[in-house]
Length: 333
Ligand SMILES: [Zn+2]
Image 1 (cartoon, rainbow, N blue to C red):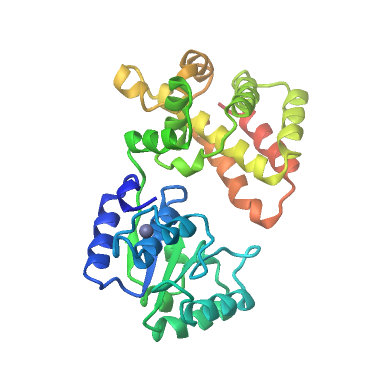
Image 2: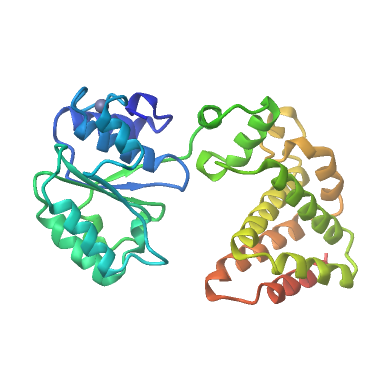
């Protein structure tokens, strides 16, 4: 995947290419922007451009060097991600040792650190020393969806390259590249991605639609004022999901609630705004559920589920949290 093949992010692409061609790319960079918009492929393309013997400063995508970088098999390019919740000192030292050592065969050593906001204080300090005086062959790229969470001392040493959400057309091109799909599925996934193709990569659509049916049943139940016994059963079902599945269910519920609010507000009355719906394929069903809610209650549901999502890091009891939220949402208007 060379620069030519990368989809979207025209400003980032232009800035990086200009730096590469002039041979003046800062030795440390911070790639900041939402998850799933292409920061890692861009970082790998930089690594290719720095090391490609065929098309220097550009990357050919076909030589042995480019090919191995793309597969993570090049001895001078390393991708590091936090081992657990944090990047600890041992992992940081090892990565630093790698990037300060002379290249084996390429021109540059490239260290790409994913979720770089996860450095703990000691690891950040160790990295800082290298950022202050990097050897000429070292290229460090920190990647983060929360660049503001990095220590100011690190941010001041790493010029930020900003990444944004992709346009719907760009998302479709990314998805097309991942493999052949029926046009309806492609359109649906592109809407679901909300500008972040990485968010739907590898999604099992069949399983997703099944989860969506269950989430819709819950919202339907809430809309009807819901019998307590059935709500508690639903809370038990959702609350007992493993954490990643539970988070996915919360984000699914949030997406459905946003669509309901959109319909409720009348924003989707015309065809143009109907495109705003994520779940446009079940619009009639959504409309019927929306009729049973007030806009205020939809917003309350959104904030209750969002509060649960935020509380997950505190290891809350998920069943109890869902019970409390659902019972609260059936009371009042
Ligand atoms: Zn090449």
